[in-house]
Image 1: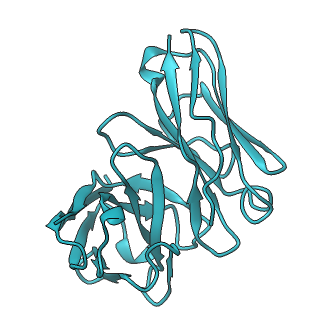
Image 2 (image 1 turned 90 degrees about the vertical axis):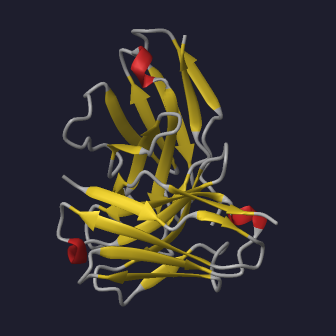
Length: 121
Length: 110
C-alpha cells in the first residue's frame, strides 16, 4: 500500500524559511517522479514542483521559482521541499504527491494527507 | 502557466448524469492526452478518478468517464449518488514539462 506522510509544516514569519519532508513507503521510491502540490485555504490545487526519480532534474511553478527547492534522498525514501523567502501567499496545505511513473507526463496517482504552512507575523 | 478553466459549480439529482468541462490551450490539454481528474471531499486529500483523458484506476466506479475534444476535456458522472458530492479538479501535462490544475468544480447532489 502506497503511503506518503508529510511533516514540517507550521507557523513562520514572512521572509522566513521552512523545510517540509515526505516519508514514502509501499513502492520503489527511486523509480517514480515525485511532486509537491499546494492548496491555499478555501482555494484550488496549485502544482508547485516535481523531481525526477534519480533527483537530477527538477521543475518549478513560476510562483515559487528561485525561492523553493525540491530534493529527495532515495536511500531514505524521503522527499523534501525547502521553502525560503516565504510570503503570506504561500500559506497553504502542502501535499506530497507520487507520479504514476518516471516521466513528468504521467501525473499524480497518490497523495499524502498534507501539512499546513502558515506564513504570518 | 494559467490555470485550466472549469465551471465553479454544477449540480444534479440522484440518478442523473452531469458533465464537468475543463478548458485549456494548445500548450496543454489541446496537445497532450495526459489529462487527469481528481475528486476531493472536504478536509481530505484528492483522489485520482481518471488518468490519460479516459482511463479509470482500479477501484474507481465505471460511473466516472472522461473524454477530450480539442482544448477541452470533460468528466462525466452517471447515476449520481450522494457520495459523489465533492470538489473535482482537472490537471494536464504542459509543454514546459510541468502540470497545471483547473480551478475546481463543486458538485452538489440535490
